[in-house]
Image (cartoon, rainbow, N blue to C red; front, side, top):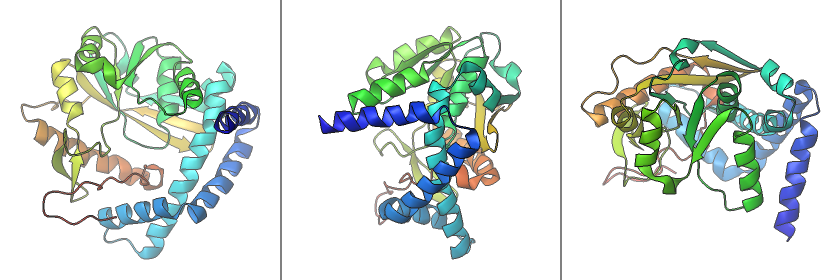
Length: 292
């Protein structure tokens, strides 16, 4: 009962935040992020370890600074869900700028959207579903808190025609949607365990990486279009990049390694907005010691 009350209270707070100027929300996010940085020491160590492994030439001072701002941007992006999911449609559209190769997402060509884990993931999804007249799909993991689960689902399905596939829907259902022209918003750049992953370098460190981008593109006979979302002072810039002309190949391992190399170039442009608090190197190749 108490947990349900806290869930409803949190959702009420997000409704209230939707009414505030963006500068106020970002200031609150900065305070929350600083508090999380100080108190959530395990995740701070995870981020520090990830950055130390990926950027061995960085000084300890720079690693601490990027870790701090990672927490801040994470908190700000979470509070931004207040106006993303409860603000007026006009306000949402004003704060989300869609730019770049937008023509890649027009028409009905089968398309897999490569959406790396930057803090603006939900903002990117909202921009696409609100501003483009297509039926978008993505894969969703159910939350244990059913109140928050329903709130998140409603927020992500707020605009346009969209579908959130659960893990139980299976690959065939997702591929069928791809083939009829429903773009798949895919987030394949995390450690989902070694069982279905391949070992490919990420910033020179072997990382268990799911080859789903290559496999969905091949099974769906789809092109791959990267979409990068960057937090800005005025909201978010959602950039659509040109489709990859050399992807997928006949080798899903080589494709996944290529995905990581291109992801690195994206991260280098905004390293403090990447999801470094995730245990990217949790699983290690046989014989290698854990890093956390």
